[in-house]
Length: 584
Image (cartoon, rainbow, N blue to C red; front, side):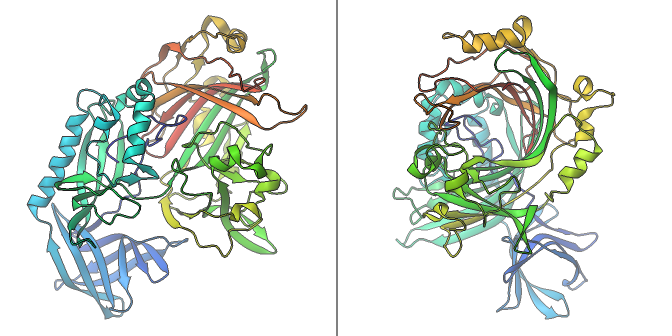
């Protein structure tokens, strides 16, 4: 979306790369006469990277296509009944043509049947709207939630968050919202491309226009989010599902993606320097590395109880049949309060509404396949899967990750449920989801070999920013954290190397995270626990923080069993690099 609130913190909107996706633009090259379509839906199947070559009479011959599994919604649709390929928009040089139709002529050939040139005035309106939003953030973060969301429609909803929720969240911790959003100041929207335009009549007799657009966001720090997708509306939003307070005006507003939950995938690379929670001494091995894919599902308005996420990844064999990678993930609402999950793995009693879903466990240590997952027996603790932790970031470790099957360009599906199917093994089978969405994995984590650097000792030459704990050192920082009144820390860190990415890595935030048993837990119990996240926002290119926050252990926790200080870098798309010091 065009705006973002506090990111990746408890209670925050966590919209660092909201709307970012694989490019959705169909293009026709006038010189080569090649029509390139990102994907086409054909019945229950989807074909990606579709290319057709035109002759002088605009009859197109199929040149290539690859079946996409699982099948997601295509950019274009082949209407089997009419024998017509329907493309919402095609970019031809500097022009955009809408509602392009190609009639099937047989033998994989298609004749141009119709197209409408996008009115220059309409494109100018959309660009003016984007410029107005840029102007809202040109010099400072808006001073309130109402200002920050002022260009959203009353029926706005995106990734489970409504305008009302975003407004309240922004104001709940205004200082953090202002700090977290500072990187947006001076950002500009460029390469604005119309993907579809719909003129519709509402049931109450009013009318609306909707336009899907794609664009890049360029930030003042030199980074860029690419291929962001957003839906805008003008006219009346009456009849928008789940919205009882429609808005009507001639100007454009953000409508959002209207999804009930947030769903995204992060490609993460991690360096961890470990210390003893008891003494602060370095553990052996001290430094470990990890590559993983984090599946981020959020639902701050409690629309769902559980979801099933599937796609290319580490599948398993069940009863002799190879199964697609799939997880059953349960809501943090359930994990913190459902009686059936009390004391089970992942039972953090202070999970916040906007925290992420966690996958349910299975018997053993293998991939937690959705059809085998047993939430009531094994709880639900994780949201990522990958390779490591390893102290040898080498080619063999990279091969281990590769063998898991994660795929760049792979389409991942989420089925959203609001029933009690989470209570039984494979309880989702035969149930009807309340919604189904798709996302594409844009990148894999940086390789172990790249992160290790060129030296013989990765722990000293690896390509990560390093936190410097200053004069206190690890033992002093640990002692400070155990104090009833811990002092803020003066920390610094080395610059994060750029790595092999088209996008520079920028610091999103740092944090102190701790967890421990809930007060009053039974002797020897591991759960329930209390978690505590305190974020700081030094700035995208900062290398120090004079007052890194350190929070006292909350009264509802009897002890701390884990503590970490972490630097969180992003390429503003799906690529994440983290460097942390942990006490365990």
